[in-house]
Amino acid sequence: MKKIKITIVIFFITITSLMAQNKADAIIGVWESDSKDAKIEIFKNGEIYYAKLLWGDKIVEADRKTSKKDLKNPDVKLRSRNIIGIVNVSGLKYEGQKYINGNIYDPTSGKVFKCSAWMEEDNLHLRGYIGFSLLGQTIIWHRHKE
Image (cartoon, rainbow, N blue to C red):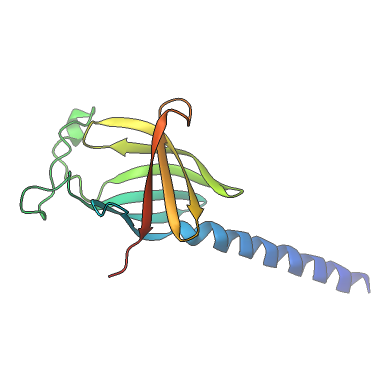
C-alpha cells in the first residue's frame, strides 16, 4: 500500500512538472511584431530562452533581403557579422507567469538592455529596459503564420 501511495505521488509530481514546462515552452517559435517590422525566433537551451533575429526593416538593406552588418557593436571583431541570425535576446528564465533576467541587444544602437517577457492570450510581450522595468519599452509580438 505504501508503494502505491509513493508511486501516485511521484506520478502527480511528474505530471505537474511537465504541465509547467509545456506552459513555459509556449514562448518557443517564430514571432512577428504587431507593426510587422521585425521577426524573431525564440528557442530554448537547457532552462534558458533565447531569441535570434530573422528579419527586420531596420536591419536589412534597401532590397529588404540583404542583412546589414553589426556596425555599432561595441566589440570591433563583431562589426563585420550580419545582423540577421544573431542571438539578440539571451538569459530569459521562466518564473511563475513571466520570463525574467534576460538581456536584449539592439543592433541599431549597439546597446544591451535588460529584458523580461510574458504571454497574454496569444501575444508575446517583450520589454526592454534600463535599470528598472518602469524605464523601458514593450513590444507586442504575435505568432508568425507562414
